[in-house]
Length: 102
Image 1 (cartoon, rainbow, N blue to C red):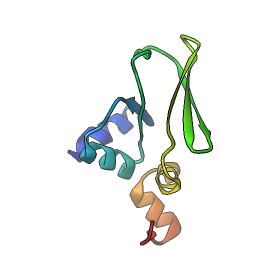
Image 2: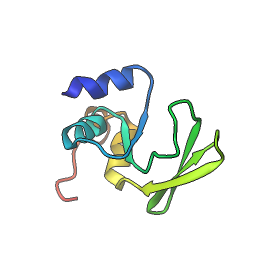
Image 3: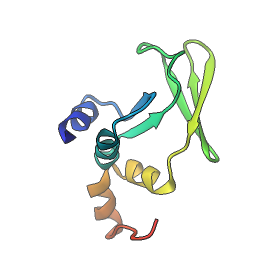
Image 4: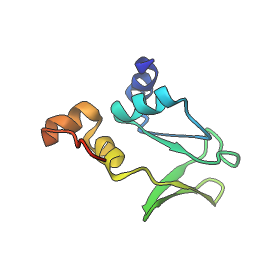
């Protein structure tokens, strides 16, 4: 349901890191302006402070609490553009269009 990702965003959360996502949740999160990141979360806890760095074709997740790092595949440019715009509706409002060929 779309509501699940909207509630998370309403709580002030902008990025979600998990081992995996249901495809529907993943798309709804992006469309709603959240950034879902699939990564190994074995060494992460809900209370850890994290910093995410975009580097080339990878994301580096710095665990500031445990002083460790994890990597994940960077989302595509379009996904980052939608995220930076605040969601799909805001992206289309700001660009006036949606790319037909990705």
